[in-house]
Image (cartoon, rainbow, N blue to C red; front, side, top):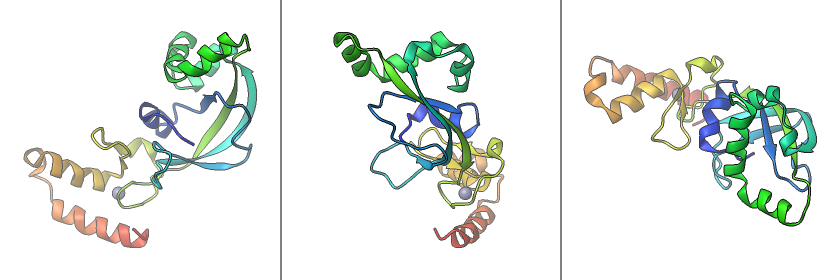
Length: 176
Ligand SMILES: [Zn+2]
């Protein structure tokens, strides 16, 4: 499934467990496991999720509780984001006098891997996200290497060679 970059961290931290899609028909199945991507044609993915529930509803029927499951503080905040992401859908349903029905997908995270070495990130709170790289969710060790490349001054006290050695081992184990 495709996600916006701003939603990646929310999914990885477990804050976002629902997504609403302006689909004509369901594109996922309950029980199915899907890769979360930022770019459609890319082979890269930042997580795998399992669909727990799937239903259709009027977009403005979203409850306050569900807006929080979308990863936002309240319904108004989430609606603003949905409207920004789906302007064409809302414009057309209003123009055609149709009800803006969407699909709600409730999911849970089943897998997160370091984008660099491929190790599974069991403790997601320890995963590091790099802002400069569009799709980077890194383990602690790979993040240290990334940091040393971005800002050598701030990491000169670290043994980067050792981190790199360990990364090679992880890469081999994970077929990278
Ligand atoms: Zn890594």
